[in-house]
Image 1 (cartoon, rainbow, N blue to C red):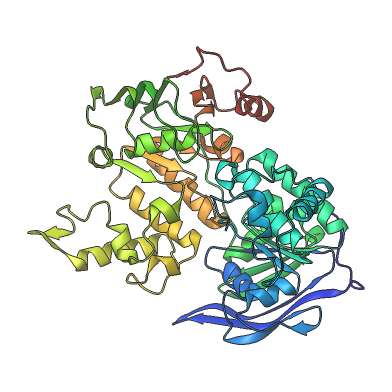
Image 2 (spheres, rainbow, N blue to C red; image 1 turned 180 degrees about the vertical axis):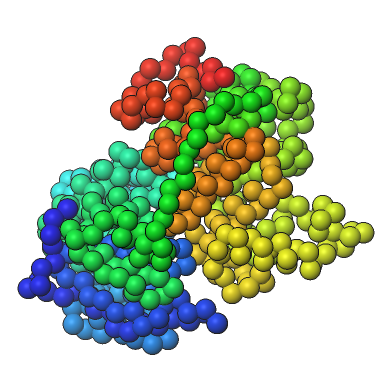
Length: 517
């Protein structure tokens, strides 16, 4: 993106000796760094390394136990988001903070009106938004309701909120986690324009290829401390991965082999829409033993409905579901679990975990009535805690104890708990819906290894991912979904990235193209 933030550039932000503790856990341990005007710093680290905690201290959501934050040479009062906003610091969270039932204009202008202002100057606000949209390539419909926007459009609204408030420092927390490749390219184009005007950016991501492309300098956190600092031009992916996890990361090898029998089959299945996404339109799909079927597509084209269907949280309106050749008449979440379907949901906060329940309660939530955890109708808490401890150990979950509330964990550590629960008991079908979203490079390699191990023992796996590289690396067959229809399957390496991208855009689909058997 260009070498910004030279030695002579103005320091816009300084963090000095920031320390933050949550009980016995030290999330940040004497962290210090500076950010220059027009510089992009990438903040890297494995899950639970303290990245988001550090940014929440900077933005005033958390109060540091020790240390100070300065913006443009002036100390920021701790725990005061308004002071951070007034100092020109804007933050776009990984999970967007927009009011769905309000318009884009209302969301952007919310909180900017002075208390005793006579009226809201709508025309002036609209002109300002249109100017920012035009200058930085952030196309939005100002009068659209946020609930009707795509994920990429919502992110543009979040960035416009910060720019509308004259942000001079922009914090982006996992900004590409839910974006398609095309939307990611558009975001990087926007960042390039913003940095050219003197805006400074802190870019938090696990995707090493992206931080190498977008940043001037990289800071790596490990166990709450800065384990390394590099100029982007002077480092490489291997070195950064080693700094993040303390060792060289070895990518799992995908060995070719032939699939077995059909485990689950959908025939002529149509559904209602799901979470604003497209409904399924008379699709056929088979998942076979020892095979990973990768589903690629632009968000909102029916992935949510298909995932809900496989998970048992949605019933088909037409068509049939068969497992091992037998039609399942009453499809439900209970039926899915009874047929040993391991479920990794897309949204770990809304449907994957219950934040105010403990780690132990969450990991046994799908099996608490089983003989493994229940004795004569009473919960065997010792067995449940032992199971939770095993997941914490095997998946390297960073949490104080099995009794900790899940909402206190980072998103990546929550995802690891879900993975441990889903892989338990050797399921015959695994629904892997965005399984590595928000995970660091070491955890991603581990998840890929677990998926390939499950494939080797004969599990049928549906991998739904908006990371096209992940789909192409792991899937034996690739299917594209567009407007609720499925393309014909293609074998690994049969189609180029461009050809898959064209299918994602809806090209090449016909009324007959829903047979993905």
